[in-house]
Image (cartoon, rainbow, N blue to C red):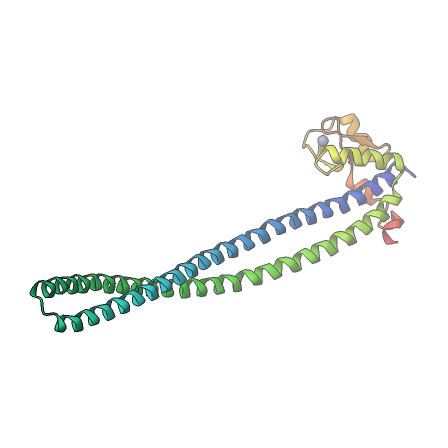
Length: 251
Ligand SMILES: [Zn+2]
């Protein structure tokens, strides 16, 4: 295999790796947004649950207060009956005072019941508002969630296809250069092979020394950039090989 042919196989591999990297970047965004959606919905849901508990408690207190009021009123009724049977003036005065005190206490209970009723009313309004908000949010986010899940499936499919192409492309590359390619790729942010354009490396944008530049233009040898150490190539030189090379890319 000529150096130019080897370069062409490396460039093909690099193109696939760049696409895989882009797809993986897109894919990375998805789980965090899905988690965000879960926590948004979960947060609203627990707020709602809290208010429903408060409503249950308020209704329970209201029933207890109403029970107390009923019992107190019955007690007063009995005392009033007893009052008509009392002969002693002193006992009469004493029971009258008791009745008066009990009536006053009942006014306090009635007041508390009214406050509870208002609280219940307010909670019901707030709960139904929150239920509506949650339903709206859930509707919007569910759509987004299924869109994201669909996107995830699609990206996974594309990555699998690119991996398949990569396996093919890899087979066309000379073993020694494949190892070097992988080493550089790991050290250089996923990009091991770059073009030179107007005497500059397109990886690090440094100027290529003239003597080296001439070698790269002709594709006589495989060279690396003296600054970023990526493998460099000249596009027109590769294009002269034609589209049919490497064969393995077509299966
Ligand atoms: Zn460079």
